[in-house]
Length: 74
Image (cartoon, rainbow, N blue to C red; front, side, top):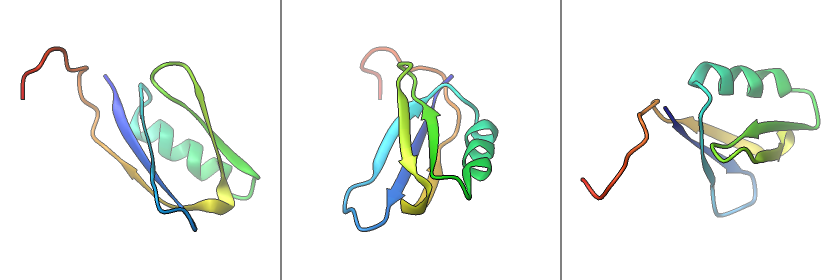
């Protein structure tokens, strides 16, 4: 399963979007726990770390967990 995470950054026109294998609850609890700290660190689906300063987060959109898509089906 994977989930798309979109983070809006203040004073930046583009959103930060990545996919993660974590659940909505885990991502949300990680972001909530990071409030008051300098940054939140999340893992993407390729094992990379996504580092976002908490003071720069404008909004977070969490997608639904979906099975990994394969092929060209619409």
